[in-house]
Image: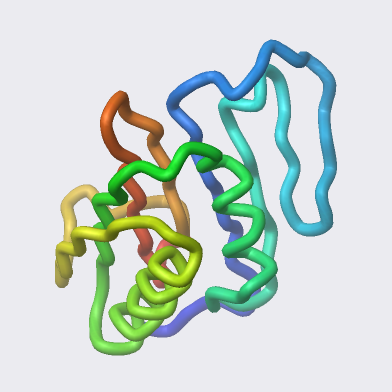
Length: 127
């Protein structure tokens, strides 16, 4: 599967992280409204320390992370980078490797903040 030269990343945060209504721009990520949606733009679908830092800014409490990685071998390698990053930063990770998902995800990374755990879906080939 060929990746487009520009991939739009979106982190969707399910729980409200504050009641601010302004737009905050943080390098490649923008939080809008009540900060429930964070949209990230990258020219490559790769996981970087900078993107990881922005991800865990939305994960202030150390809860278990249910990590779902979707895609082929190259996508799973990126999922492994995300897994190792989260573990290095003190999160417990349970991982599920999924080859395909229907319907396919539209975003590279989706974060949902549940009561007892975070649910992170990583789909590097998403458009």
